[in-house]
Image 1: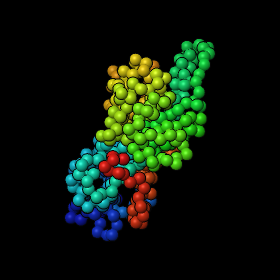
Image 2: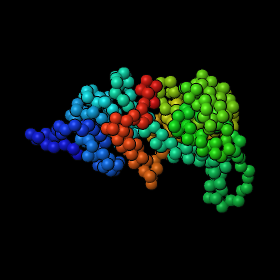
Image 3: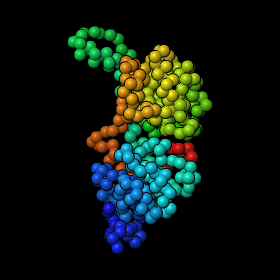
Length: 341
């Protein structure tokens, strides 16, 4: 309980002109080590227990929400008590579990970890493509069987990647793919923002999604989850794809209609899928994906790096924004609350 002192047997905020920072996170979590540089600049309270958090929420000016422990208190309940909050930062990039109408309509600024995990996710995308184009599963099975089985493999160079959601993650994936000789098509809500983009060969509006999907060899879903993007790639979209298409999802599971994807894979209307996210997580033991040889499963851990640690990177993003906040400078990664990202 850093930055507090007991008075009359209770914990109270110190009455000095420093912002009150409420951190919703287990008090013993290692990510808190990253906050050492700012502890002298704020009054900090850390807890993950709802009753304790709601007791301190009324005086909080800043709330850092980790949402990483799996048992974080529901933020909507915390919000009901946070009458003085001015800025909320999420250590996650996805906001579907944080946003709700009252918060969206409020003047409170929200920032997130957008882009922090993009490098590792982009490497997974490259690995997913190589896994199928170079027949890595076949290589491993042959090695286990002590079988010399030479065969031909395919190129990445010359293929076209279609990025659904050309934000921080999508663009980083495209950058690496471009370096390997791939052509890049992209769909985004505001295509004019990429008019002069040196990576994208062509940018489509969201209404042109099917037109893009007809032409690409790899479909990369990297969009955040919003009401507009839920099942953005579904049965009608799979109907227009190439039968050789590889589907990759590193955004949010429900952006792709999973039932429609299973049908498309089973009926060979698309060739393969490399998935880091799913509609239901953990993936049930009896899920069809487990037994499909044309599916590569990553248990939502493609961004969980070490050295540097993924949560350290996210916490350091907050520290940089905190320094900006107390200096009166513009914050990074400000969320468009109505858009959902």
